[in-house]
Amino acid sequence: MKTTFTISQKMSISYLRIIRYSFFLCFLFPIQSVAAYSYHYDQAVQEIYFNLLDLDFAKANTQLARLKKNQSDNLAYYHLQNYYDFFQVYTKDNAQVYKKLKINRDQYLKELAKGPKDSPWHLFSQADVHLQWALLRFRFGDYWAGFLAVKKAYQLLEKNQKRFPDFAPNYKDLGILHAMVGTVPDQYQWGLKMLTGLKGTVKQGKAEMRKALADQDPTTSFLQKENRILYCFLLLYLDKDPSEAWQLIEEQAAKDPPSLLVAFTYASVASRSGHNDQVIKILEQQEEKATWQAFPFLEFVLGNARLRQLDTKAGPHFERFLKKYQGQNDLKATHLRLAWCALLKKDKNKYLSHLKSVQNIGSKNNGRDKDALHLADLSFIPNLQLIKARLLFDGGYYGLAQQELNKLKNYNLNKVYETLEFSYRQARVAHRLNKDSRAIQYYQKVLIEGADQPYYFACNATLQLGIIYENKGQKNKAAEYYQQCLKLKPDIYKNSLHLSAKAGLQRLEK
Image: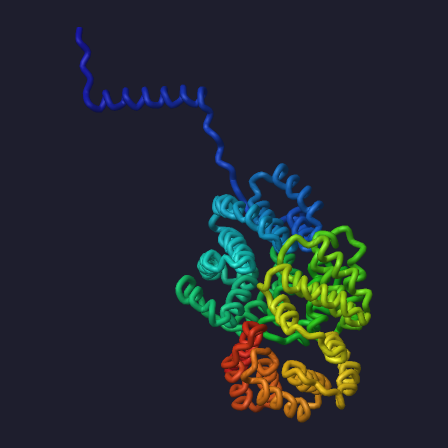
C-alpha cells in the first residue's frame, strides 16, 4: 500500500531532519560561546594605569600580562596596552620604536570595538587611542596620518558626548583637541581644513578641561592626575599662562608623592615660570628612582636647570643624556649647552669642538635645535656676559641677569646680532622686574632695529608688547602688536611665537 503525504506533512518531516542533523553536528562541532566583553576599570586596572604614569614599564608590563590572563574579557587591557606603547614611544623618542609599535594600534582598535555599545567607554577608549597616536604621528612628521587620526578621534568623541553628556573623560580629549586647533600654525591649516573640519579655541579647550577636572565620579576620577598634567601643558604651551600652570602643579605635588610624569610636568612648568631652584629640587628627588632610566630627557632638563645657575656641573647630565638617548631631537641643543659649559670654564677649544657637533649631529625639528644650529652658524665666540644674562634670565634670576648686563654698558658690541640681543635682554629683564616703561622702550628699540633681521628678537618683542598692553587693558594696542608679531617671519621660533600671538588675539575676543 502506497503511503502519500500532504505538503505540510513533507515540510514537517524536513524540519525534523534538519533538527536531528543540527543536533548531531553539535556533538561533532561544539558551538563556541561568545565572550561577554566589558570595559571594567577596576582597582587592578587603575594600579596599572598609575604605574604607567610613573613610567614604571617593567611593573606595568607584568601587571598587563596578569590582567590579560585573569580578565580576558576586559577590554580595558587594550586601552592600557596602548598607553604603554604611547609612553614607550614618547620617552624613547626613537623613530624605530615608533615604527615598530604603531602597527599595534589597529589591533587594539579592533578589540576595543567588540565591547558593549551601551558603555561610555566604548567610543571613548577608541577615540583616546586615535588621539594618542595622532600626537605621536605629528611628533614624527606623519602629518597626513596625524590629521586623519584627529578626525577619527573627534568624530567618536562628538558621538559619545551626545550619548553620554555627563561622561567626564570626553571633555579631557575634546579640550585638548579644541585648544590645539585654535593655535595650529599656518603651514598646517591645510590639514585641518581638508581632513578634519574641526574648529576650536584655547578658551573652549580650557572650559572643557575644567569640566574634566571637576569630575567626582569614582568610576572615572582616577584620571584626574592625567587631567591635571594635560591641563598644565595646555596652560603652558597653548595659553601661555605659566603662573596658573604653576599653581595647579604645586597643588598636585602637595597631594601625593609625584609620579615621574608629574615630576617632569612640574619641572617643565617650573622652568618656564621662573622657579629654577624647584626644577632641581624635584628632579633630584626623582633621580634615585629606577624608572628614571626610562626617560633620558630628564637628564637634559636637570642639566639645563643647573646651567641656568651657571653651574658647570651641568655638563655630566648632558653627557649622560647623549649616552642614553636614542633619538635625534635635542642633540644639537645639548651640544650647544656643553659648549656654554666650556665657555664658562674659558675653554674656547672645547667650545668650538662642541659647536662643530651642533652643526653635524642630530636633527633640527624643534625650536631648541634650530636655535642651537643658528647660533653655531654665526661663527663667532659670543660675549660671555650675554650668555650669562640669557641663562640667568631663563632661570628666573632676574636681578643677577641685570648685573651681567650692567657689565656691558661700555662694551663695544660690534655684531648686529649681539647689539640686538643686548637690547632684547634688557627688555626681557625689565619686563620680569615689572618695569614696564623701561621694557617698552627696549622692546620698541628691538623692533625698530631688528624687524628686517632673520633673528627672533623683534618677533618676540612685538609679542611681549602685546602682552604688556593686554595686561594694561589696552586691547586695541595689544591686538595691533599681536597682528604685527604674525607678520614677522624669523628663522627660528616662528611657530611658537605665532601660536602665542594667536592665543593672545583669542583672549582679546572674550
